[in-house]
Image (cartoon, rainbow, N blue to C red):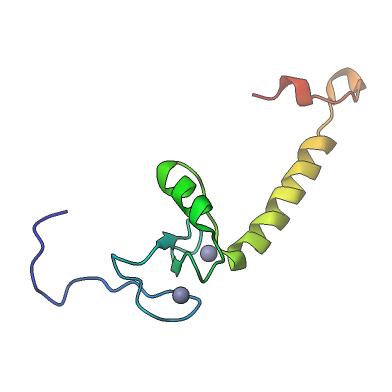
Length: 100
Ligand SMILES: [Zn+2]
Ligand SMILES: [Zn+2]
């Protein structure tokens, strides 16, 4: 980031839940999927969880809206990997062990 200048270029992030600005002083959190900002409070994230997420920046966080979608994706992925079976020599045994 460059120097802060008082231009109109400053991006105003609005909470997708309440549509109010998420300021620097607010506990804001960015959804990785829809790239929307939220107030931690709007997403009912406790202070503890928020502190945890802040500390672990590699943690993925999805908003409630995306979470529902992601949950479905993860579920179907899990189902798919369970279904993966070995077709070599028609042994048809599960190949999950050999997954990277
Ligand atoms: Zn909000
Ligand atoms: Zn989202």
